[in-house]
Amino acid sequence: MFFFRIGQATVDWVHVDNLTDCILSATKKMNESDLDTTRRPCGNAYFVSDGTPIDNFTFLKPLCQSRLRSYPSLVIPHWLLLPLAETMETIYKTTAQLNFPIEPFVTRAELYKVGVTHYFSIAKAKKDFGYEPKITSSEGAKRLGEFYGPDGL
Image (cartoon, rainbow, N blue to C red; front, side):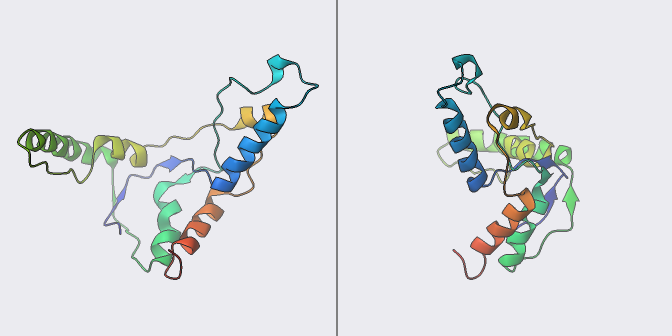
């Protein structure tokens, strides 16, 4: 499945049950008739996550285990792979113009998604409409592994 891990980035994940709960909480709050319209969440932006940032590849470890795949111990920093990704993108652009595109193994966008720490506060959603995640990222990872395990899909 994975030959190596890219960086050691901490990121947010959101379980579909948490996302659904968040949407329902916001909808309920928007429909409260006793709220003045300036205090309703409509028209505002909110970050939604499990509220427990986790290392990207730690999140995927239960999936590897359930699929009976080895979990990579080699960690390559994302910045070390950036020149390779840029070269692969250039090759793709060149070969696409010649009508035989060679798909890149990795792109800079992918490296920044998985190799750089990025997570956000859900405090505004908690404050404005009482969002409270019920499933942690670790529990979500476990459920992902069980769902896609040997007996799953």
